[in-house]
Amino acid sequence: MLNPKGAAIALAFLAMLLPACTTNTTEKVGGSTAKTNVSTEEVADKTNALLGQTVTVRSEVERKVGAHSFTIGDDKLFGSEKILVINASGAPTVLPDDIDLQVTGKVAKLVVADVEREFNLDLEPQLEAEFRDKPVIIAQSIALAPEVGEVTRNPSAFYNKTIAVKGEVEDIVSPTAFRLDEDGLDGVVDNRDLLVLNPKTGQTVQDNQAIVVTGVLRPFVVADIEREYDLNWDLTLQRKLEAEYSQKPVLITQNVYPSAKE
Image (cartoon, rainbow, N blue to C red; front, side, top):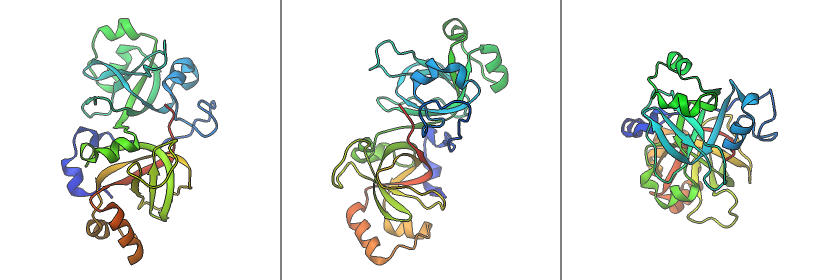
């Protein structure tokens, strides 16, 4: 359950909650463990295989196209096709600077009239000329997708917001808490590690597992955590976490699932 006070003051992205990923049983796009987590390249190259399916993509924003649309893609890949995203989540389209987004929605080929009719949107006329019959993701949820280090270095930028953080499970400290390390960076516990509180039953993780955690970021205050969640931490663990993480960020999970591809 989210912190009611945090939820009340969260900004536009709080409305864009990410659902858990579903399984792609039609074609193994992105590998055996990727399921519906795909890259923008795969959406462009395997559009027909993905049509009508719900996918999750993590990528940087390339440009804003209209009031409800923008493109995503990897500028580091020369000649890579940019994918149009139409925001049908019902929340405002707020595009961040220098932070990736995680987008979840259905893959389609753009026919403006069909999208406007189905989702009650008023799209710009130029979309038809520029993107007709090209792949588009009709987004049902959008979240900020910072790296672990971006969160731990500047947590105030993300407090009380729904974010989707990709990383590697560094240390499972209890059945309801673990540390998330920046993916691909091995080493001791340092300021790159993010404490994750996982109060939901049935969401288990393994050491060194690459995952994406979606949830709301807040400062770690032991008294507040104890009051809001029944975690059954013993006194030794409480003191250890308080010494290491007091007033540092903690991510309260909504969903945990295998890492999305970029």
